[in-house]
Image 1 (cartoon, rainbow, N blue to C red):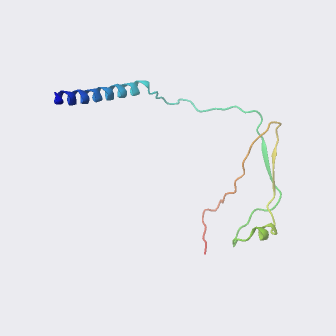
Image 2: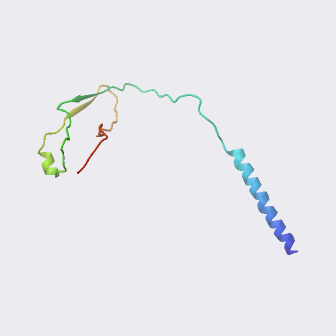
Image 3: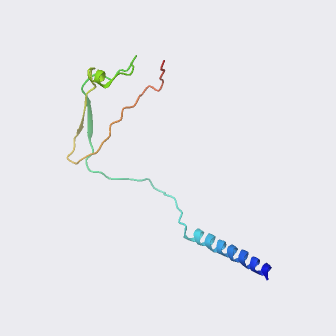
Length: 102
């Protein structure tokens, strides 16, 4: 009797696993995109104007904020040439990937 209960329990677990596996395979949706994403926007025209010389950090070293405020700043203007509102983000990134600190 005990052997029949064990076989019945294992059979029920196996059948449940098969049902769940087949259901998951049947209801899973897969696909691939065949065309490129496109979007349409109204007017998007932004201009960037340098108002001072380029940033030069040659032989630079860390300084305090107070000392930094006393140095020459790098000024630029970002202008939206359209009537629609535009969000933008400005990042400062190094173009020279070689850095040596001593």
